Structure formats: structure tokens, C-alpha cells
Picture 1 (cartoon, rainbow, N blue to C red):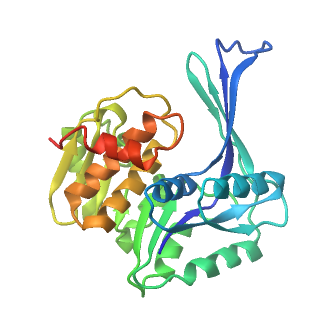
Picture 2: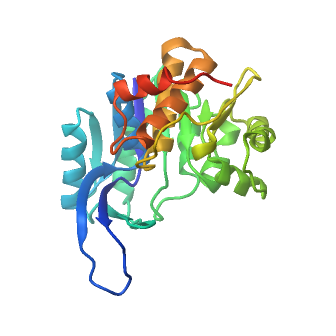
Picture 3: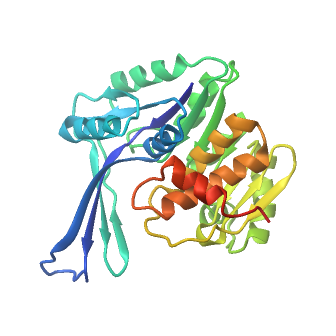
Length: 303
């Protein structure tokens, strides 16, 4: 079974404003409420591809109830830990001449609730897959992802980590199956600016040298790079299409890669599925459907 973990899920409230004027009353031309959070996005794409999975994470208050309701209404399965206090966050995404995001802090996590979630994670068995995705609330330690991997180190569990800074660096010693920084995040780790696929390759290799088994680097319109565990390097420009909504594209890439790997255990296929899933979501108002992903997959060849 595949499990995803989102420590700080949200309601994503997208609102369209023709020309945003700060300090003035602005009126929207559309609103959209969706369950959000990187792990939930991964679970949604896996579900759309017909792959069974369970989403774990914390929810709280009336917003948490709506996250659960909307997520399960999409056909997804959640096993959420309910916090006794606080409310799950609402992230506001203003779509105007430019896009502006306001991401809320989220509720504090009490020790009892944290233990409850950790017990669920500790029940995973050899052969399962775990996706640790996104930020964690400030009430939790930056070592949390590393602590989880240490806890599961006696089992053959395939673990993917989509995180930044210390959350990512701390897990490398535990040899995660997959990490997925974007080119900007990868550059920040090494103090460089990475703009092209060729520039990304040596630094993706450096993350492998530090312990990551596979490193896929998303680069928006530039495509992506994969430094695979077998030593091969795959790269591709982005498939052609009109970008409508980039939210969740990186999460879709993680889901697509895992789906492709589970299907054929072939790195080229997994990489192409990841790139296809990320692009298909970027070309869609919502996270991509299976048919949208397959259409993109069939539209290009790896270079």
C-alpha cells in the first residue's frame, strides 16, 4: 500500500481578481475551494491513476472537516488524525495580473496527536511505500522526517521525500528512494543558480552522493532531470501545452514517478510518467485526470 503524509493540510482558496489594487475594495470573478497540501495532491493523482493509497495527516476544526469531506468526495481515502484544538489552515491564492499566495501557519500539534499519527506510520510493513511531502508546522522539529525514516529503517519501505532545506537534507543519511527538489531549491542547497538542465545534472548527482537513491529535479518550463540510482541520467524539455495552473504540478510529478516505477520498475518510464503527470496538472484547472496524463505521455519522447 502507498501512504502519503501531510502534516499541515489546508483548504486552498483560489480567488480571481481582474486587476488587484492593494488598499482598495476588489471584487472577484471566480472562487474555488479545494483540499490542499502536497501529500493530499500526491494521493489525488495516484487515485486518479487508479492506484490505491491512503492519505495520513492532521486536521482540525470546521476547516479540517471540510478538507476531509472534499478530499473523500474526490474518491480519495484518508485516515486523518483529528486535533483537539485549533483549525486547519486556509491558504489564499489570488489570481490577477500576477499570482499572489498567502499561506497560513496552521494549528499547533500536541504530543498526544503526534504520537497517534506516528503510531499509524509505524504500522507500515515491508513492501509499503511512504511519501513525506511538504512543510511541517513550526511546533514540530525539523528532524521529524528523519526521525520517521529512522523509525522505519528496519523495514523494506520505499520512501519519497518532497521537502526543502533541513527537512530534505536531514533525510539523506537514511537513503530515501526519491527526493524531488526543483532547480531553485537545489541551487539554494549548494549556493548556486541553476537555470538549465545541464547545469542541474552535477548537483543532482551530489544529492545522490549524499544518500538519495533517485533525484528528480523539476524545472517548470525547462522540463526535468532525473539522476537515477543505477547511475543513468535522464532529462527532457517540458511537454508542449498552455500552463493554466501550476499549483500541484510538482506533487503530480512525484505521484507520476511513483506510479510509473510501480508499474514497470523502469526509470525511463517512471521519469516520463512523472513529467507527464506534472505537465498535465499544469495544463488543467484541477489536478490531472488519468486520460489527461496519458495524452501528455503519448505526445512527446524523452530527449
